[in-house]
Structures are given as structure tokens and as C-alpha cells.
Image (cartoon, rainbow, N blue to C red; front, side):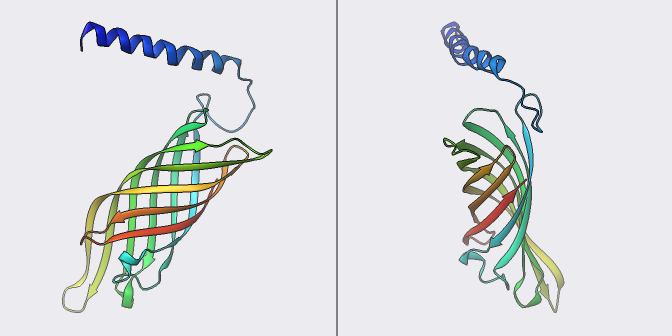
Length: 188
């Protein structure tokens, strides 16, 4: 990195960081459950509807999911890191169809209305797709693949930790089929 690039980086850090640090010092302690740096840890429970790309392998298109996330910051735009798992009953009793992943997304909180704050979020994830197959000749085996996926949510935050949202996970399953799994989520 050149000297000029270092100077520009330092100047930008001062211009952005100084107002943020001054704002943080003026903020009163509210006693809400979170760490001192604005990090909030949350659990999410979901009712998931499998997308049409999973029709060939999913017997019941309605499944369940769960996740764990950490949201960082106290500004309207925040970073959320999340781990998720969704599962569906396989077609014709052939086993479980599941996906699990790790992702990062930006969460933008819109202006609040009294005790309700609307938000939108989107980001990318690395998903592990596991399609179990119960074959009479070979027994149980799985088709496992790792693919990039995208996730978006739209919802409402009640207080500091409780969120109710609708979302979609869009990804490619191992054999090239694309699916868009929609869900209703409660985050605590």
C-alpha cells in the first residue's frame, strides 16, 4: 500500500470512527440484555415452505427450521452472522431432505413506530444440501452438495430482541435445480 493510500485510509477512519465513538459515549445504558458492544444473540424458529425445485425429492412441502444468529452494532444498518437448518420429509419415505448453512447479511432498521420497528435484510450464505435416498438395492445414502445461496427477510422488531418476519432462501440444490424456500420466522 502506498503512502497516499495509507493517508486516505487513516483520514477515512478518523472521519467515520470519531463521530461513531462520540455518539457511543453519549448513549445511556438501558439495561437491555446484550453485550456492551451492541451485540445481540438470537434464536430463530421457522415454518418453511419448500420451493418447486425440491418437488422431486420432498414429500411434504411444509417443514421446519431453526437458527442462531449474532447481530452487531447499534446503527440502523447492522451486520448479522447466522447459522441455519431447515428440514423436510422426503418423498415416498426416502428419508430427510435438509439444508444447513452459514451466512452474513445486512439488516436495515427503518424508522420506528412507538414499540415496533420495521426492518429488511439480505445477504449470502454457504448452504449444505442433503437429500437422503432409501434405495432397496443400496440402502440409505445421501446426495450432499455445498452451494452459495441468498437470503432476504422483511419483518417487524418488537423491543430489542423479538422479531417476526417473512423470508426466502434461494439456492441451487446439487443436481442444478434452483429452489426458493419461503418461511415465516419468530426470532427471540
